[in-house]
Amino acid sequence: MTNIPPPPQIEFTNVTKTYGTVTAVKDISFSVGRGEFVTILGPSGSGKTTTLMLLSGFETATSGDIRLAGQSITSVPSWRRDQGIVFQNYALFPHLTVRRNLEFPLEMRGIAAAERRRRVDRILERVHLSGYEDRVPRQLSGGQQQRVALARALVADPPVLLLDEPLGALDRNLREQMQGEIKTLHREFGMTTICVTHDQEEALTLSDRIVVMRGGRIEQIDTPEQLYDRPASRFVANFLGEANILSGLDVPALPEGPVPVGSVAMIRPERVRILPCDAAPAPDAGRRQRVAGTVAGVVFAGPIRKYEVRSDSATLSVREHVSSEQPVFAAGDTVALEWLRSDLRVVAE
Image (cartoon, rainbow, N blue to C red; front, side):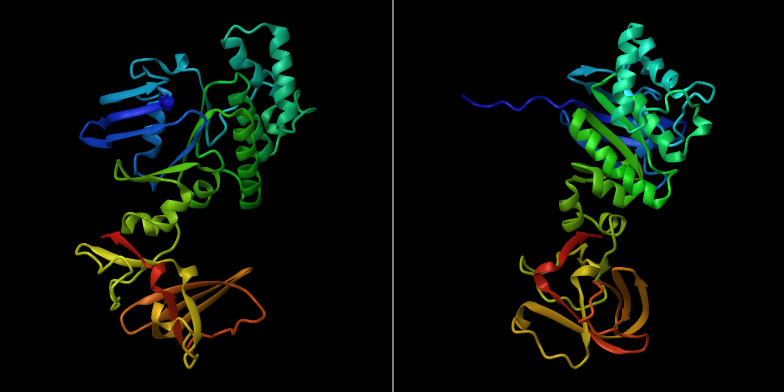
């Protein structure tokens, strides 16, 4: 007997959204599996927030269809879509206590008072806010307010959770802490989650898959590992991390053949080694490419040292983990850069 995979939880089919003469989303199609964590990533104006607003029901598609569990929701109002949503500014009721903020979505669903109290107590314990139920939002830190917003989205156990730049208002340390908390909550609750962000590190950390958008269109959809290691285009390579585009260098044929017309070779900075200019060739020198250059700049960033090196035809970035065994180069030093040809990637221009 053939195993038939379950249908996707969310489906976008040829969805377009226009505002007058401006097209914010252009004929996008993708699906999200039940329990999957998918991040929509892109720069400002890419259409990522509009896509989330179409799914939430706060905007209506100009054309195309959006389906939830196989049922079209294009014409369903937002309040009937049974989704939890967390906004960047938290959107907590400032005059209500934490408990009342969390009870509100349960009241809207007609849940009895005793059950509301049980659910609120349980979710407060889960987000480490037991004892804070009688405070109002202004009495909480930014991280605590974010936990309340997450708790409010989760307390009614909706099938879909939407996150709109959920960590954008937090400082770096708190943002990293909350990333771990969101991953843990997603594993525990298992709900289908769509997150919108412009933060590449956040997308790589949280996601099962990432949808990269540009100019209202989908540029590439894949797992974080595949997107980083096998970007389809120069835009994706540069947007998701750092990339050395080798268009000015003479790149020998790659393992899979010559670089096609309309494409360029790319290598990530951490795949490039920086060596003294007179370093002996490696035993596998035939598998490597080496170029000479001059160090233009050095930045010490804790565990990472960053070099910018000028060759005859390009400026290349190098990122290496700091080690006491490594030589340290200074601006003006002549060096050699070396990489495995198998680490080169071909991306569309």
